[in-house]
Amino acid sequence: MNQRELGFWMCTALVVGNMIGMGIFVLPASLAPFGFNAFLGWAATVLGCVLLAVVFMILVRRMPEADGPFAYIRATLGETVAFAALWCYWISIWIANAALAVGAAGYITGLVPSLGRIPPAIIAASLVWLFVLVNLFGARSGGRMQVLTVALKLVPLGLVILLGLWTLVVDPMAYAANVPTVPINLHDTMAASTIALFAMLGIESATVPAGRVQNPEKTIPRATIVGTLLTAGVYIAVTAISTLLVPQETLAASNAPFVDVLDRLLGVGNGRWLALFVVISGLGCINGWTLVVAELTCTLASRQLLPPVFAKRNRPGAPAPALLLVGLLSTGVALLNYRESLVKGFTFLSIITTAANLPVYLCCSLGLLWLWQRDRAGLPRLTWLYGAGGLAFSIYAFIGVGTEPFLWALALASVGVPVYFWMRHRHPPAAVAASTLPP
Image 1: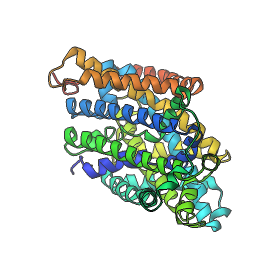
Image 2: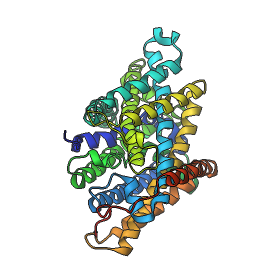
Image 3: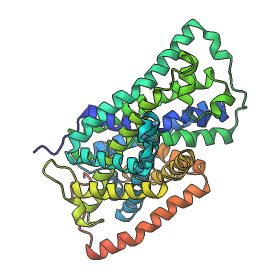
């Protein structure tokens, strides 16, 4: 059976689907207090994410047979650093998956009130296991589901953009009625940039299952760049329309900003159906991150950094034990946290998830700089600039998330230290394969 099942469109859908989750549907409200600082924050975030996308693109082309970020970091900075970075990333994904499931469960009960008699935790756990089941049929099954959910979740975003453009044509003065008055300043710009960064997490999604991708040295870079630019364009457009058409105070206080925007554009009451697409968006994210975290678990186990049983695959090629582990972990988090406020829980977990993702971005940027210093053959002329830019943006983002999330990320890395040394005690490291880092 062909083990490389993911093509360009599936990889692009994985990037876009994992980046466009439930966060975009509250993002305009989160950014509203910052006024035009939000757009400066978006500019910094998009520039940084494009630089990071190029970093991943160069690493993929240099190591096309490597199995994702773990291999890139291990080949350049060493296995211990790679494990610490990917351990944080691994934990953050299944925690975020649980949060997405809880959020989607809340919207589902809103759409189907009769389901309100079922505890939200049960619905959330059911969603987790639904997508474990989908991905048990192989990466292509998960990839097809991702393409479908991405197409559906873009419907309300596209509608907002089209209606916003129509309003610009028929009533351009509507965009001058609610101009934000918050002055431009560095503090608010950095704060807005951090919020925007959470919405952009996932640029590396196509690289994680690299071993399952067709023609990875071409497919992954194209999917990463296209997915990043497409998502950034959609985000900036809907943020601009929301900010300029809805009064700042109203938008900042809204629990469903897109509903308010559509009510303003289509008439009161017409935005309620948006909840359906919020659910679809959340489900697409759960599916995509389930695929990514299972492949990452399989990668770590194949390197004997997690128990070898999690490296096994079933007949369709899916990492079945890894998927079952991820399902159990996400279910546990969902059961423990479903009583928390959706907004509070989502906000806290989003910042922690951002902080826990940053070590991968920082280490991959450092790894690219390491390659530039050691062997520049075949690397683009501006490789040093991309690596330095990705590194600078990662540090900037660490500053933006604040002290507490940084300490949480540090704590997550520390928890992985005894796991690493225990596994290495039981399975001494083998020499790095010659194919991992091209001569």
